[in-house]
Image 1 (cartoon, rainbow, N blue to C red):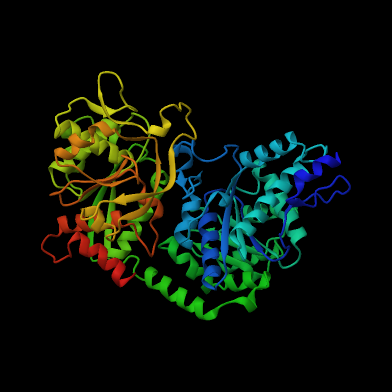
Image 2 (spheres, helix red, strand yellow):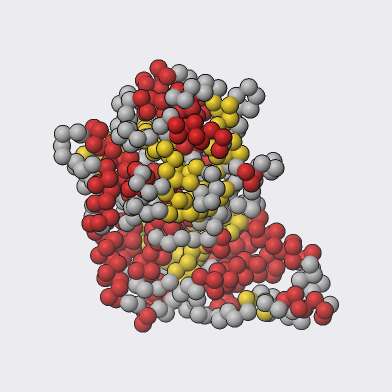
Length: 592
């Protein structure tokens, strides 16, 4: 078996002679990187990602380099095949990883791009352990949940620490402490804290304080039992964050403190607020950030001057939230409209624009499967000031989207098409302007139709459902002098994020352009169209990308800003609002 030891050259602490099995990357220094572990009790959906990213932000503001990771319990390798009705939107990172929507929360609040190292599923852990077993990397040991599965989790975290050179790694475990599939994650966190040593880990338990209307008071028993469940697994929380509709009472905080051995000042009320972006300031006001730096022994490394500067900038943004001088309605025409999380990034991008432009946006959700004719489209859209057709897959609702796009084009309603919305705009234009009456997509109909939208060249021979799309960040060439070029800051190249399998068929590009459609953005070196616009229209922009994925609170998406500015100008033509391009440029010249 000694011949196999060369397989472990990059990993230490792997031996048949000891029970201390804990693979550690070569060059890793214990104690250099600190870990904040966030777990949930009582129920899921409490906002662990919001809390964790907000706490990471306040530490980043102090000058620390932070890197988050989401640990998911499901066996899928990634989130790419998950149904939006069941799991919300699929968020795509710049390196093409399809992941949980919480990664979007981290990117937005931290204003930093993440990668594959920041997302992990049980499926990934089991896959890697089994691959190593097949290659003899465990030196003939029987492979078990403990120490091998837990060891793989710890290895992931330590590799992230080294890859990101983070001062603090924030670990969010999906679901709740009581979920069976989370047991090995929680055990791995206990082992990690033990191995890294005192002052290297801080455990935060996010729980829920019930407030039954029939009783008229807050009840903490469920929260107490959830914390006890965590303690039974060998983890003593350092901080308890109590989610509730209203501020948690002193009595409840005292009960949580007494029954969990957590000091009262470490029991924090994380009650509902007007915006998730005010949570960082809530943490500062409650001194939770100071508690974390004390537990992790980081006090002497705080950059107070940088913290003051970053805090001032963020508070300038949050002070504008809710301060509006106008109101518009944007129709979102999709087929997952009953589950708002299916369009989480679109909603957040709109929120960023609301604050930047001081305009309240009312979203009108329009289920496109209910639109079966041009007349119905007109009835649904008659009271909107702008229209978004988002992405999606499959045939359901596509004709309804085409009808909505036709309404926007013919009635000068500001329009933004994303991914499938870009493709449907091409189909609508081909049918109703170019006269190609049977124009369609090969995804929808292949027999007796003109497929103006077809499969990407590199995907022609791939038939599997997963792993065969254009994913992640790609550079886009922008044609000088076009509206898109001006909208995107007069840049000849921009980076956008993609998640699609189909494109405009090159054979139809000339005909579309001859009839007036402008393809203002394309893939470098390839006839793959990625941005379109319609000259003479107040705002008609489509993109094969998902610009909402890269919209940030302090740097809103320019395409969304353009739509909101155009919709405002359409509704209030006489109020002196700036033209679309001026409004967008003002946001970035003045800053938020």
